[in-house]
Image 1 (cartoon, helix red, strand yellow):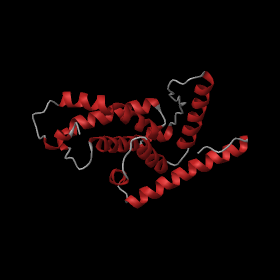
Image 2 (image 1 turned 90 degrees about the horizontal axis):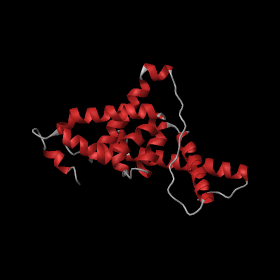
Image 3 (image 1 turned 180 degrees about the horizontal axis):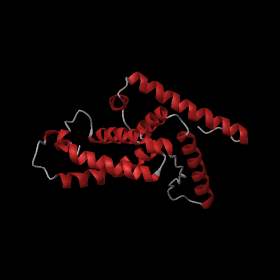
Image 4 (image 1 turned 60 degrees about the vertical axis):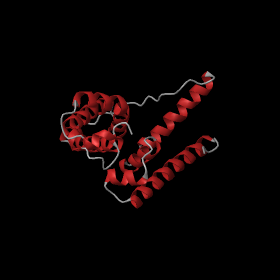
Length: 188
């Protein structure tokens, strides 16, 4: 991988240049994961900034026990959880709307339908308990393996598999329930 050299660096590396590279390569992933955990754009901005400050400070401590991406996502998860546990967040809860991004599509109708389906799916996923949301996002969006997720979340691979199965089942159940209410066919 492009950042494998970080496993062997002890000192003398231009940390500013490496931080710029890491932010360019993984900044969006870190922000999206932070948003997914916190449900707030502003908090995701703050968490992302904190993550890269921590990375800058701990750059020489990375030893390659996981991929750089997994390391960054683990720092993001822990930072976001710390923020959510803070007294300020427990007293003040801000809700923000989610605006999904859709690519270009052949027709306005198709684009509108895709947007509605995406928003509905995200709304369902965001209502899942945090433990289920995490594994679903880490697996589906970031492509982490069961073992990488287990190491990052500090649980067994079996626990990750169970959470992932429960998350997928909950999403499918909710989609089927909503389809039956509206008289639509189930999404598969």
